[in-house]
Length: 229
Length: 229
Image (cartoon, rainbow over all chains, first blue to last red; front, side, top):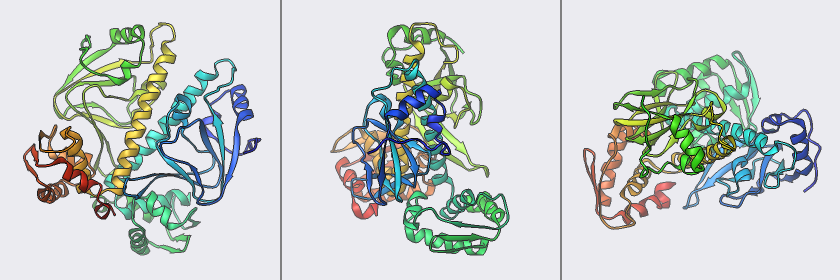
């Protein structure tokens, strides 16, 4: 672990809500650690002392079901945080975390909160906002799993990644297709079939490179009643 | 709406965490409302002023996807609360709520928190715990949707409802099968097929009545590697 001067270009929603003094105080005590792809960052049911912020790379949050099957819950990118509530209130992590690519993670210990005025109240508020965002995204994820087909979920993911409202787009998947399948709640072979189905909508994928002829035709597919039934 | 003396036999996790003075103060300002089955309690994206506690009956939380399909997110029973964070921090509801049976709901306005000492900090802490529980249950729900078959999800639901560790059990589903299908992320016809498959495991269902010959054989099915693959 090492101390870290947070690069100001990194947007960290949870820290951005704090006053400068509380933020600086937390950062002065924060530590960072580099993980190689595939390394374990923390385990489900472990006691949590620190909230974690992804500084670069990708982190996978997942759970392992008693028979060994793994459920991917989310993939976090630069600036996103996890384990906020348990770090503040004490408790055990609801998920395991693993480096989905080489990555750097900042560990911020909240149990010994600095004595800056109002620090606890400020941090509670920021943690509540983070929890609210997580809830929204979990709710969105459940909605997606329940009412959308795998092909529609893949289309939505590609639209988000393409950053284009319409027209052509070229992009590179940020991690391998096995993880993408897990994130979208599909088996790897179903993901391959979904990519196959998207060919007629002008999507080509070779390894992690994807080209889209017209993003708006993908959007039509996502909104299609029949596919969504 | 009417004022309400909370029946002490009702366990309300969010209120149970408060000191007596803060709890009494909140309750003195709370209001209750009776809803008939099918009535709308609140709508997604509406501005939220109150956290809500189910006093009796069942409440369905759901979202409507742009093409009109509905995703059931959870079914809440007596004592459970929702919209806690948005009621505290201000914001709009991430979900719609509907009476899944005739029900009574308590509305607790948090924006004008009483002036009892430490009320805000106490309530924040209780809201954080509630949010943590919601996150845990959403995470569990996503895990279930991703790694378990429909038949396994139904089995888990029946085991939870039966309250028996093993042996025979007779139970009545708390709401109709269409809602149960939505809750478990299945189409109604898939739920029927899942009930059909459970016959060989000693489960019989007529309308909302269910008999289970041996709860532990259902538990074996849930833990079965092959079914979960």
